[in-house]
Image 1 (cartoon, rainbow, N blue to C red):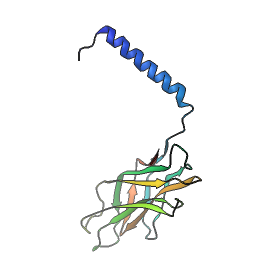
Image 2: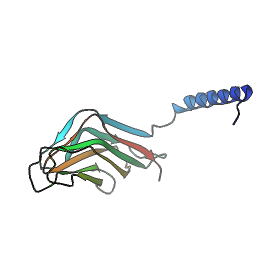
Image 3: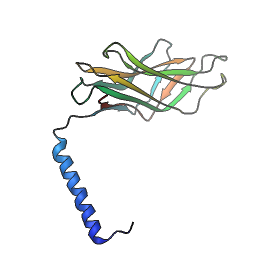
Image 4: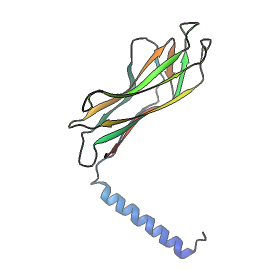
Length: 169
């Protein structure tokens, strides 16, 4: 599409008008997302679990007329394994999002990563993303990431996050 100076001025004006209207009305709109992240190097190697992952917990708000559910996403792009404890069992880990106080009881989604061979002593990166819909109740509630490992240490570094987008079903 060929752009003329007149249409360029109109597009700039339209963009400025939209931004001004958005900024003016944005203060009265409720927030529609929640986010937490960590850049800490974290490890898990005990076989008691699952346990919460430090820094990856959010508080979901109570339901409103605008929102009655949250789409929660756990992003763990830098998982890897070290320190195998067996020569016959491949290293693996389960990760999950848990909302223990959701209306109607606990809500969770589980994902796993692992090595194909028991002879791996240090694995490549194993990215993992898990998505869960959590109903919102009359009060705020936590949603957190948890992990457990089998035969080794699961690690993450540089970045991991948990976020929620509030929606109306």
